[in-house]
Image (tube, rainbow, N blue to C red; front, side, top):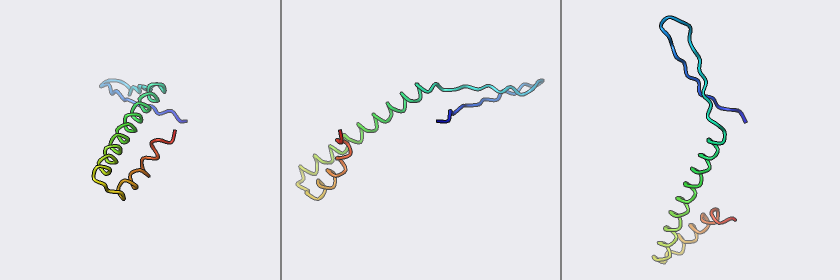
Length: 77
């Protein structure tokens, strides 16, 4: 996996251009991505559960079947 780097350039008035590199640690990027993925997963699952519950309350069988197929991706464990 290729590392991504941020490159900053500082320009002096009387000298050469200075190139400074700053790297974000892999562990920090990975943990932040996992937290964001979990938040999105839980939000999408909760939104789908409320839609399923409302379709049950409204006795809409077609919508319930459609939403239950989508919900299967959230309970594959």
